[in-house]
Image 1 (cartoon, rainbow, N blue to C red):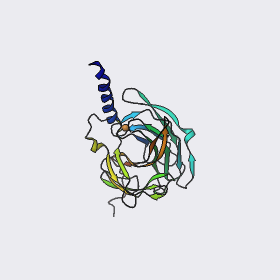
Image 2 (image 1 turned 120 degrees about the horizontal axis):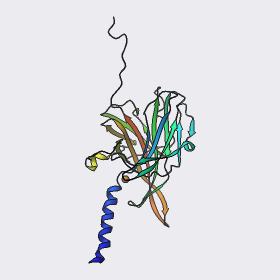
Image 3 (image 1 turned 90 degrees about the horizontal axis):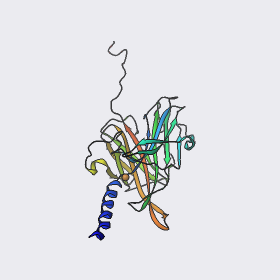
Image 4 (image 1 turned 30 degrees about the horizontal axis):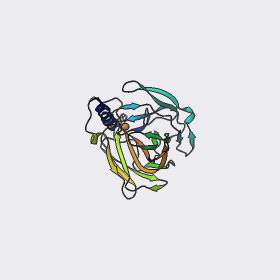
Length: 268
Ligand SMILES: [Cu+2]
């Protein structure tokens, strides 16, 4: 029955897409979570599945900016450089910029992604992503950066050990967002050979009535907390579709800690 073949193929495509549609996130990853003043740091922006380390072509971002510890905002969009990263089958597009902090304190990097049409979900993503770069002095990480939807840390987002609790308050248009879905996922710098069940790849939580989300960051490395809500409509091929507004905060958990010797320890 050759006429049945197309429907079988359609079903296979649907199943493949469903498994691929999980957990596409914006990764904004400095090569180090903390640096010294005057020390250059490269920041990579890539798109895909953090846990699986499955990367896809990254659409050009709309903008990237930095808020310095003194509150000064700088547009870094012109410094973005298109690069390629190894993907599953072939190389994929990603972006990179280099930044040298000239103050002590916490720098907030905010990237706004271009709206992206999610074919499998029949909706748009409108994403922003934030990461904190710590430069010696512990000040500034708790300040909002003025994103339309934003995770503002309540726990300092660096100097964390595995198993520590992390909290952030989610705001939408400066109001706490109660009951919002927040996804929590760790980044693997290389694709793992074996994968746990889906519920161990992406965890989910809801914000409390004050918009606060709580997550335990169980292992070392970069973690993404992504809050989301449906917000408005956007046109695709002459039809109107929902827009899912998402905001990701990347948080680093230290593995091995470097201890320094105390010279006079033990002396009377
Ligand atoms: Cu995905």
